[in-house]
Image 1 (cartoon, one colour):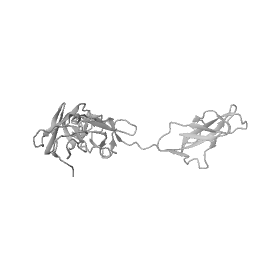
Image 2: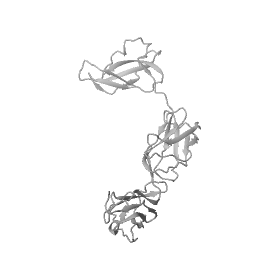
Image 3: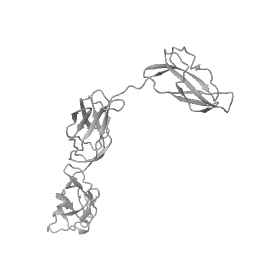
Image 4: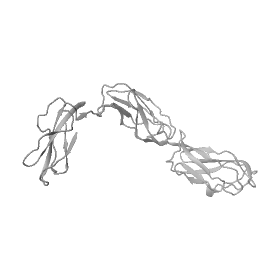
Length: 310
């Protein structure tokens, strides 16, 4: 507790100290100093720090000014009776709370996450080792950008106040996820954010299919292919070039060609954009296929090469 008063002296240049005596209500003053301020110049405010006070206790206090040669009389604070409190100490109620003592870390889709620990602590931050109750964990509804589902065992009984979740898993890639832990009688707690990286690439997928075109004209809009992992996430780290070829030749003579200047494109963040795909002959029911290093082949939907576009 900090007490303060303006200190005065007949000598304006004097260096003064403020002395205080603090006693619980019901204990008479002894005219003995409890605490003293740092030196202060006459006419300024002096501050005294008083420690060691008890919770839920009322106190009264008196003060005096001391200079190099003498001290003033003691003066009780306020105009109230000395059996009335000048101040009452009431410490905040210690509230038990959950804490992620081993928070989630970035993981890979389909892989078991590193163990996550949630601990019950008291208001002073100490682990409540007697707690053996259930703690439930799930994705925070306010931090689930991928619309994901948390897999694994989501309930754990605490041991010595700590619940460990050792087989959590997610399959939806994304960033900014947070976990939320709940237990009876305490406020839910949210973890720091973490991310889920895509799993290994496996399949290409047409995300913009080829549409009808005319001979030797680039298909518009540009055909786009994403490289996917086994959970349907775009494999953003795919480092190779994807190649496009005719799968079904719709020309009358089955001898159409795809312009080779536009049939290979490098993937950027897992997506390849084919902006110059040209077929040289008229035909109905063409399809394309795409392939690349480390992935399966994928075929497009059908399209036509017409004399003119409607």
